[in-house]
Amino acid sequence: MEPRILLFAGHYGSGKTNIALNVALARRKAGEPVSIVDLDIVNPYFRTKDSAEELARAGIHLVSSPFANSNVDLPGLPAEIYPVLETRDGCVILDIGGDDRGAVALGRYAPRILERGDYDMTFVVNFYRPLTRKAEEALEVMREIETAGGIPFTSITHNSNLGRETRPEDVLRKMDEADRLSEMSGLPVVRTTVYQGIQPELEGKIPSLFGIHLQQHVFD
Amino acid sequence: MEEKVLMKGNEAIAEAAIRSGCRHYFGYPITPQTEIAAYMSKVMPKIGGTFLQAESEVAAINMVYGVASTGKRVMTSSSSPGISLKSEGLSYLAGSDLPALVINVQRGGPGLGGIQPSQSDYFQATKGGGHGDYHMIVLAPSSVQEMASLTMKGFELADKYRMTSMILADGTIGQMMEAITFPETKSETVDTPWAVTGTECKRPHNIINSLSLVPEELERFNIQRFERYAEVEKNECMWESYEMEDAEICVVAFGIAARVAKNAIVAARAEGIKAGMIRPITLWPFPKAALYEASKKVKAFVSVELSMGQMIEDIELAIRCSRPVSLCRRVGGVIPNPEEVLNSIREAMKGGN
Image (cartoon, rainbow over all chains, first blue to last red; front, side, top):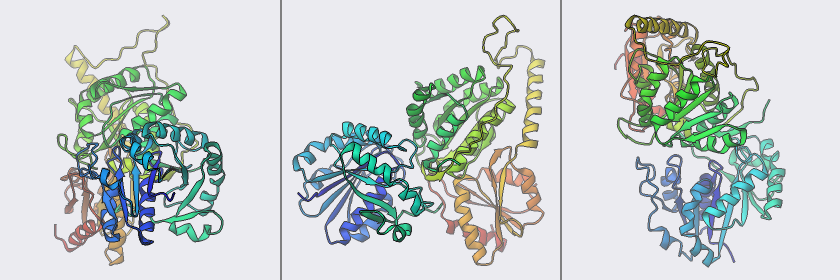
């Protein structure tokens, strides 16, 4: 069954939001109706809603807390998530908050998603992040998220990067670690994400390469 | 050299503290600095350290006081409203001449304010906050790498001068991610013959206390403390000069505001305005001499702040009001964009305010 619900979860700061945005844009460009749901109830900074204008321009339906990017530090989620999860045409992308604390919000939707069955729950991992430097540590985070969110992972999205400083060799150096995590968890690496600036140099060297663009800030 | 890691500013502080030998962390969760506590809670138990989520900010700062009394490296972290709660403890730490590291990842105020970034605790950090005559060493990082390096520096300065060092960051630098490396050099430590570690009946008691029963004694302690502060002012000022060689307009900004200002200076130079920047890294001691020297060459100063204008007063004092100083500011959790700073630079060049 072709997955219609794509869930992005992982350690906080692993790149979930950025990758979810880029996958949403790619799917929309391919002609599919796309909804993106911001399920992050943990982090009030750097969220999906930062890209609200870009998403609107692309014709992507954004569902996020009415309090996102405001001063209301309230872990609220809109009721609209329920009807969106019933979507049959196009795809629904769920951007889940970091770690097990963030995945708690997924729990209330997990039974319906499991019942539908047409989902891909991908674990986003960056082996340059301090608490997921090794496959063993990443696996630990993975299990904690599954326990909190109530949905077992079905794939891995490998996103090893050093932000804007990333060189092609930095990504290549971590391919073995991604393979180790794949072996230990029994899950396939469905994509390796790199920012578009270094994508041409890695073309043909990495299977399932997926180029992403980064959000630009006034202080960069 | 160690491999680079991609870290949030808050995580960099926590990791740098651990690498500086800090094994005691006491805190209370508040946005936008919670990752410091989260990181400590994961790592401290694995290395034999103490992570303790206190029942309140007041409890946390007094736990810091307790560990500091034993001469061990100790820290707490909070954000603006939490630092207000800790202020009594900060005054007691100063009154007892104890070294400690306190992190303030600022958010908008006053009151409960908001959770977005701000620099409006500048007065609180540099002019006291708590009661009595005292100073803290105040360090203002403007990158994730500096969150790490200034944390290490903060411990060293605290130990050296028996003072509280404060890292005055803001929500954006706390939350943003950059690739950093940790230095392989070990953090410098000093002997602490004053610490309460048990006499084993081999030496007189050490007493940690901020109460003086005799006015003349209290006066003497205050004067001695300020002699130490004078040493800090003489030895420890840090700032970064950027494009100042031929500058006619001197932008002064710290932390996240300095990053935005850099982009504005590049744009100003592209249109022929000779702008430069002095970025204070220590807010106390304030780099007065560097600004005074600049005032002999430039036409005007522009203070860029995420506050209603606090540092601007120190700039005016440092240059003895010899040049006009204008203010470019956003508040409430809003970060100015480079165009706004550029406009202020253009106005300053025209002689307007």
